[in-house]
Image (cartoon, rainbow, N blue to C red; front, side):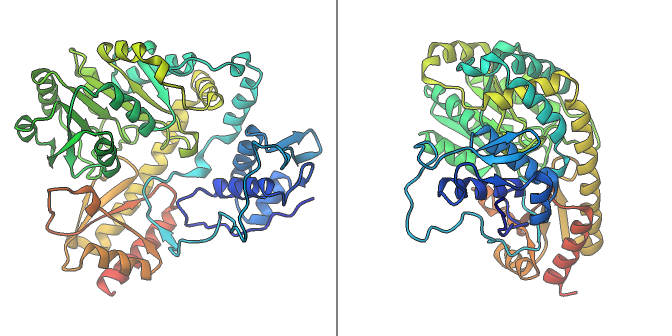
Length: 464
C-alpha cells in the first residue's frame, strides 16, 4: 500500500481536498504511483494527513470520476490510470516540483471567496452521484443549455427565492459565471459601452474590456448605483450587483431598481443582474430581483452555486429574456455545455429530493453566527476607528480603516502578525476613498479563529 505524506497548506485559498486531489493526480501522471497501486482508505489517509474524512472523501471521489482511481468492494482504492495512456501522460521537465507547497504564511486568513468545506453534505451528494452514474443520458452530449431536470428545479427555486419570472427554456447552465458572461457578451456585440459600478468587481471590468467593450465606471452611493450619472453616460449595457453589491454589500432599494429598468427601456439596452451572495441575507428578506420587476425583457439574471456548495463543482446559471434567447438559439452551434453533466444531474436530484433548502438554512445559520462574531469583535477592538460595510448579508465585510496608514501598510502589518487581509483599491476606478478599505472573508474560519484574528489585527494596527 502506498503511503501518501505531503505538506497540506491549511491557509491556502486552494481547498484542502483539492490539494489532496492535485497531489495524487500528479503522482499518478508522473508514474510515481503506477497502475494497480493500492492507496490508503479514506479513514487512513485522513489520519495520515491530519484532515477530516470529508476532505479525503471529496478528493477520492474526484479522482474516481476522472478515471484515475477505481474502487473495489471490501478491497479499497487502486490506481486505474496507466502512464502510457496519452490522456494521463504529460511531458516531464527536470526537477518538476510538486504543485502543492505551503506558500501562505498567514495563520489566520480572512480571504474572500472561500466556503466551509466541512458543511458540504457529502454523504447525500455522493449517494445521488452514485445513482446517476447508471443514467444512460450521461453517454450523450446532453442539452446545450444544460440538464433539463436541473433547469426545471432552477425554475422553481428562482421563482420561490428571487421571484424570477422565467421558464426552464430560458435558463442556460455553465461552468462558472465568467464562462456564461463570455457567451453573453458575444450575443451583445451590437452594443459598445458597458456601465459598471465604481467601486465594483474588477475581474468583470477586465473581461468587458478584453471583449472590446468601452467600460464606463458609474459611482455607487449608499443605496446603489447613481442612476443620474448612468443616464448621462453613453452606455446601453449595465453590469450590476444590486442585491449584495460587490464589494460594499449595499442593497439597492426597490425605487432605484425601477429607475434602472426605466433607463434600460429608454436606451433600448440590457441590464446584467449578478445576484451575488443573495442567498445569505441575515436581517430582512431579500429585495425582489430586478428580473422579477422587469416587464419589458431588459434583464439578464445570473447566479451561481459556488458559495452554497463547493467552488470546484462549478455550476452557474443565466436567465435570458426572450429576445436574447432567440439570438442564442440562432447561434447555438457556437456554444457547448461547459458544466459537468455528472454534477448537474447530481444537483438536480439533490434539489428534487428536498435536500437543498435544509442545506441552505444550515449554511445561513453558520455564516450568520460567524458574521455576528466578526462584527462584534471588530467593533470592540477598534470602536470608532473603523466603519464596517456589508454586515447584513454575504460571507465577507468591507472595513474602512480611519488611519493615516496606507492600504499596503495595513496589509503588511497584519501579515507580520500572521493574518491575511485584502485590499479594495483594485475595485475603485475613478472613486477615491479618503481612508483605506480592506476585505475580510469568513467562509472557512471558525468563530475561535475569527476572535484570534481580530485580536491580532488590533495588535498589528494599534500596537495594543
